[in-house]
Image (cartoon, rainbow, N blue to C red; front, side, top):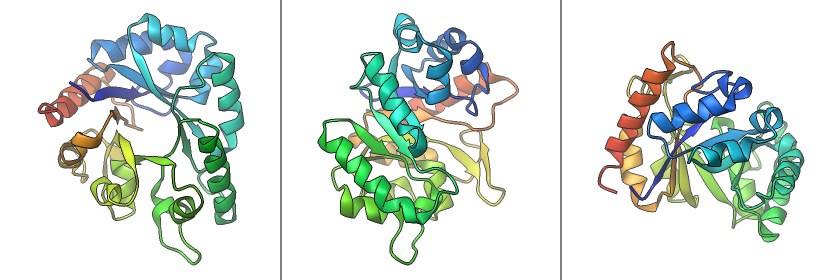
Length: 240
């Protein structure tokens, strides 16, 4: 399969707090479920000085380092110190942050992109809402037209859109596959929610390099959930 199928691991992900406590076990579980690698966040790396070698030693890759904007400088220092400046850095806008910060976010990401960093932006629902003066994504398109996007099936659905719709406007090769029950505002197991994850991933498959499974509500049986998610997404990508 050409597309890398990865697992998002961090303190509120499909494995709960396990990656922060025992990264090696978390990585081995991802591999056992036939994920080719993991996407990590700052707490995991801060808790494990050998995070990058732990991932590589278990035969997995790292699709990206996902950070909030206020953590960006810390994240870049961690990458530089580990000799991994080439790792894709995925930036999300901090929840509840003021819209007044939108131009600053756009300018910062544009500068890093111009310096050769592989910087991508992951919009949540509020970043896509239309508002006076434009959404955060509008500011990014104006000030940082070269920045690519990591699109999330659940968060785009929360904004009344699909990742397929957004791909016509936003450059992307990287998708977070996440399901949820939208009326309740809850993330759900793939296939159990209201989001047409399978259909969207299939449509975008020709342009994708990475598909990352995310579930913000860890299942009681994590092993079974990972196996289900891996089968679900491999079915979507079976012709790629």
